[in-house]
Length: 117
Image (tube, rainbow, N blue to C red; front, top):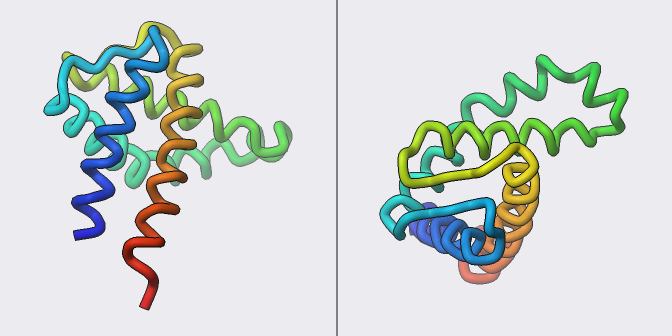
C-alpha cells in the first residue's frame, strides 16, 4: 500500500513540477505515472553504478557531482518517454532538484502515515 501511494504521489509531484518549471512538460497523469516509474527504476538500477563509476569525480567535487547524476537520470527518463519532455540539461538539473525535494516531503509524510514497526 505504501509503495502504491508513493508512486501516485510521485506522479502528482511530476505534474506539479511541470506547472512550476516551464522547461519540463508532462502531457497527462498517465504519462506522469509512467515517468515516475521509469525515474524510480533508473534510480534503482543505474544510479548505484553511475555513482560507483564516478566516485573519484564525486569525491573531488565534495559530492556535488551526484546532482549531475540525478539530472542525467531525470533527463534519460524524459528521453525514454514520448510525452514527458525536458528542454535542456539545465532544466533537468533544476527539475531533478525540485523533484528530489518533493520526494523528501512525500517520504516524510508517508513515515507519518505508516510508522516503522
